[in-house]
Length: 489
Image (tube, rainbow, N blue to C red; front, side, top):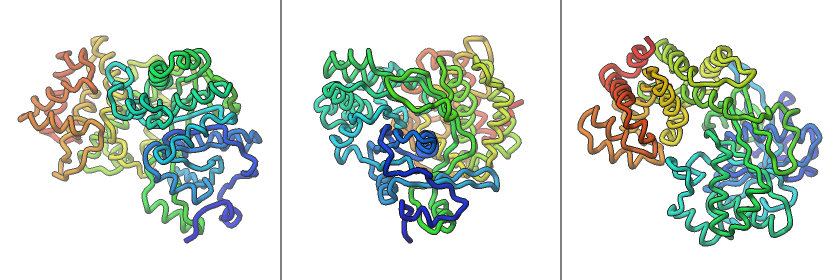
């Protein structure tokens, strides 16, 4: 079967939207680090909209900082891929043409640095997950002793990390007399702009204090909030799309209709007309960020662990269980009290829309996909809200169950006895802690000692420990469904 590419566009079915512009005229204005499905279903679509509107400056060069997988998907397709938007039985197909190809950082780091340093590039976006920032979760400091960070500091001409590539490219731009690009983090992290800025400045200052001063004075690292559910593509998705298109698209992505991007209005240079493209520009991202992290993401994580433990493969299947649905509402009741909603956000309506999104069966969003890297997600999704409620003298029954479900997940065994590999950067450490504990209370205590996840003050709070231990015992004695029903009462 032939692959999707420029030559195949005219032969696609008439109901498939294709680029209406001359792709040969598009410039590369954006470099994206960590090019995965989420970027292709979210930010790249916005840049494609800008190009479709006549602003040809915003082509996107992708970069993988690890494997060549996405390069091998997209480069043979001239950077093209299909966005499949599913809502129930409705399906809309759109071929995205903004892609300018994919580089693989480890194969030729100098080529990626040179691409980022090009005068046409005005924005560098990134989705590298929290671990890609190379910051200590507890202190926010650059992990100087980490092997890749140490390698970047020893030879910044061949960087390995996201902060390293940004520093190397900014150094090259400064030497060439160019202005810095704007760095836009698109990871689901609180204060994401501040985090990548901290890593970049810390690395730059160790290499060249004058470079750090230049970045600090002229660079821009706006805070952002991003939102779209983008499940992992599976082979059946590709096979189904191949039958529909008549050509194979190995780079396809699928998503829900909803999409949102909120960006702090702080840029170092040129940018698309984001507001005209549906992006919200604001002076304060944090209220939007908190609402999403604590309502959407917090519930997603909790229901992923509870659902997966009880044998539910997909989110829509889990929220169809009355006890789980009631639990999500109870969790939202708790989280809502910790929010300072931004103007224009109707929380009850937002909650209703979220439940509708969770219930979208056509997405087939796997609970185990959401469960990945939980140690990196738990602090901002559940622990921050729990700490605020405890400080206000409020209970945390629903939040505690979400935390306990994450702890249960670390055992690598579902309620039916199925074993699985815990996909988490701290999986080795959690397994070591659990191996030394011989009962449920000891298991909770052992995991609470993991300060990379649990802030010491929260872990030492007896109210938190008691609530989480009680929830863990309920999971052991009653199972996830009944534990959720009890927590929602």
